[in-house]
Image (tube, rainbow, N blue to C red):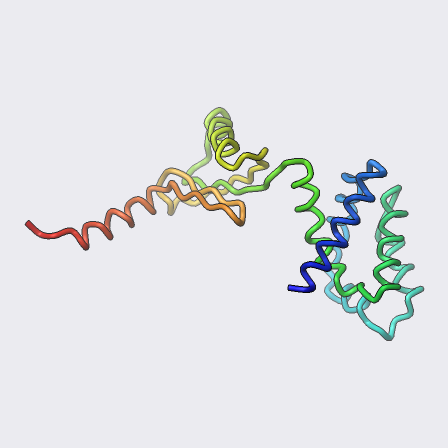
Length: 182
């Protein structure tokens, strides 16, 4: 719990500095780039967290990973984490940054699962109704799953709306099992 609080505070601080320099999007791109590199090379996190590796080598590596204007802010940020002994939180901080960035913009990412692809106008109407339900602008990822038979399943990670035929049939089956025989 404590680590989540620490990571969130640092991620929030990074976002505030980025927004203050009008570099929120650039920082987001660089954070995603780092997360992608860390996913491909798990030894990257071990290298950064190792007490045996001198800080200068860690800083040099970070400098090569980041580019452009965002580089200055991120290199300073990572140096701060190094000097404060908080580099172990980098992965967690960088996973929180995109969520905080989206929240600041009032955007919520979600997934809509349907049995078949939806027509663009049907998807637009569904998105509009879902946005009214969650009171946020949505960025939707569409997924197909013929197993749900029809309807849709909407998920944001914290919200789930299951309006699938599969769920409705399962509920009907449960009600029929408990219904008294006449």
